[in-house]
Image (tube, rainbow, N blue to C red):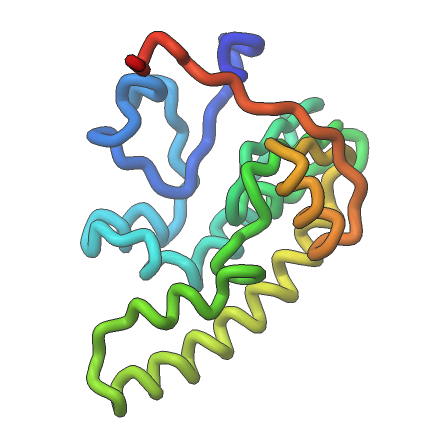
Length: 177
């Protein structure tokens, strides 16, 4: 996508240069000013950032842009744009941990029973509110693009929105058979 818009600004809520510097060098990145990057640097775990990500993406000032393209698997579709801005979202998936996989992640928790119950109550409250936010955020964009037919079904089910399927490009040079 960046090759189509080589001069485009690139924003992210969390940036880990070690993982993505080959595709997204630090010189191209504009970090969203929020608690998320700070928390991620402290914990090295993006799960601890979840309660702050909705607010972080909404705080991003995109008022100078006439076109915004978000690549989203969690929160990027929640950006707020001007009414005249064309807002396109490429969905890798609606946030699986909020919707169809919400109970899978809870099974992996290795805590004592008492502590786990407290965390599950807290997570239930956070996830409930994030699902409400996620649905409302999905209504902001003008066009939805799904990464696959399966993702298209999830967008329809959870967001009640139509979408077009455009399969992601794959760098086949990186693979050997």
